[in-house]
Image (cartoon, rainbow, N blue to C red; front, side, top):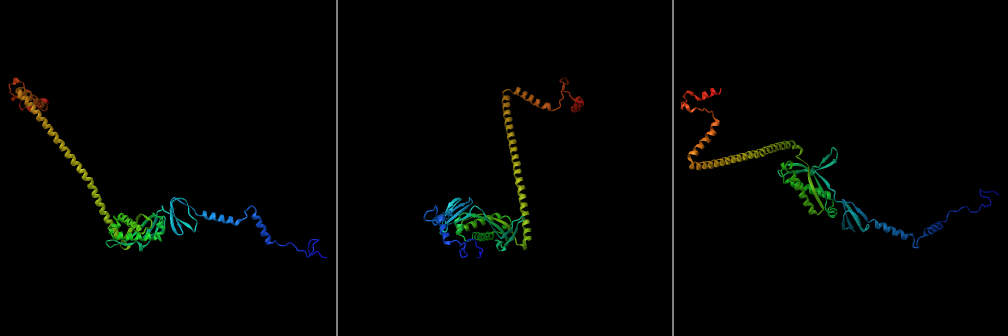
Length: 347
């Protein structure tokens, strides 16, 4: 009898190892999972865990520069600010968050294609070419900066806020340029054009109830079309030279007029002071004369002698004097000319 390659003491017709019974294996696994769990089974806990996770999806945090709009079945119920918040999980409620403090920037009449440096721009002529009030065509490129003032209106009143603001800004600028001359647009009127356009654009946004606050409108570049650019430059240069000469003349005048007025005031004050001094001196002399006259009336001889002595005392020190002895008897002829004799004596 052959061995048939089987272990000894085994019949060749005896069955070898068999694959495990699937039903028995599943039964064993189920018994293992049931250990320590309630009779209701794992399915209930899975449902509870899924509900907890679903409810937790309603927790959200809004950053300081953001706001959020909570919608319930598509209808806005609340607008919330920065901090942690909760809404009922989707699809019952949803939240849409957007930055409201950030200033948005729109370019009209041009587009930035490379920030650089150096920056590169692309002109958009269909937006930039405008007609002035004096029927001149100019190329206007400007920037609009805005931010969200009402998030609900911003999100749901306007289909595309950037497109709406761009179109309204272009329309407002065309209206303002149409009321301005080419000189104002190219030179001195730029500030007024910016302010007027911003005001008109804000009024348009308010009428749309789009929740948009226009921060400012800034002219990036205003110039005539290329075909007449050089001629316009000459005109502008001449106008600037004229303004410079006018400003220089006004500056000279403003410096000269106050100086002349100061000198005139000084002369007037000096004249008034001199007149006042002379009047006071005259009054003093008059009072002195009156006092002397009163004394003279009381003692004419004495007063006459005193006046003579005072007069001689004030005159004689200022002149050359020749004193003749009275013994000459008044005969001064031998000494004439007295001046020449005095000069010889002084030598």
